[in-house]
Amino acid sequence: MAKITFRGLDEYVAALEKLSGDAESMIARSIYPGAAIIANEIKSRLSALNTRVPGKYYENGEMAPGPTPQEKADLISAFGLAPMRTDGFYTNTKAGFDGYSAHRTDSYPNGVPIPLIARSCESGTSWMKKQPFMRQAVNSARKKAELAIIKTFDDETKKHMG
Image (cartoon, rainbow, N blue to C red; front, side, top):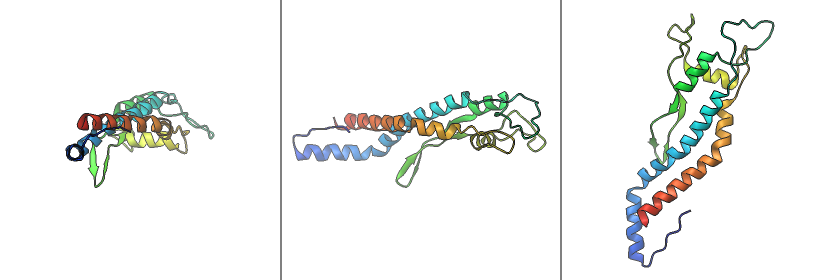
């Protein structure tokens, strides 16, 4: 945490008032560095996903090792962070997927929804092995992201009160 020294009470009160006016924007600026760390870890895990041979038919209980190479590329390009949002007392952003894959099927003539492909990879299906990339990425990057948020907020506090 930031350590700030004041000589008088009036100076301290003035610094707190200045800080309180910019608190929301300071919090928002602190969230993105942590979110970026988690997003980079997720993209790294997406790049490491196993893929299946396009057009190969898996039979006799054989499970596909993962999405097609095209679906994997679509997952990577469709991943991103949502704009910052304040909900009551919480300020956050979401990491997720949006759009449709280039892989068209009878059920999905516009392309398979990217969130559906991501969920299939994360949890597996009756025909595809699971590869929990999202859960593992968040768990492995959580502490580093929290530290980045704290450091950024401390730096912002020092700027405003120093």
